[in-house]
Image (cartoon, rainbow, N blue to C red; front, top):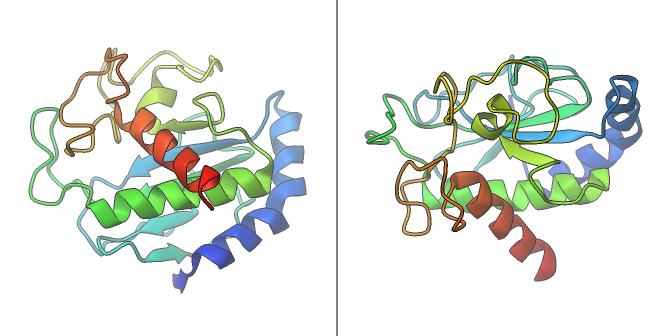
Length: 195
């Protein structure tokens, strides 16, 4: 796994754009960006599942081309980029534990979302950029499987809340912008509009 810069992330996404679009269209949809946490430790990278990994200090790591199909989101991997935070070991819906998402990780993820979405010509909205939890409950408008996310079985609830002031607690029914995906997309839009 190699450490990369934001500029390199943008270039990787631009280089993979045609291939990712072709993959997604072959399964009848537009490309997607799925957001995760590893449920592991800071510094613990899972090189076989995610395209982009972000460590505790905001460092960005990559091992695969962004158009390589990896197993990060059940039944949704073709034409999709998986971005993860190395954190959340021992997290529960009541407590994110001793290794919650750091502010550096959150801000870097927002910047990566902005750059990958921009390079892939995607709108930053839930239809195109979703947490694993949102995707698991089919909140993206694609119905790929039975629900298994935070509003149903809670098997996957990655980034449902961030443990920050703007996303303090688990509430998958919140409509006030405090869900983790809403915060991350909002920050990504801020970076896009202020670049």
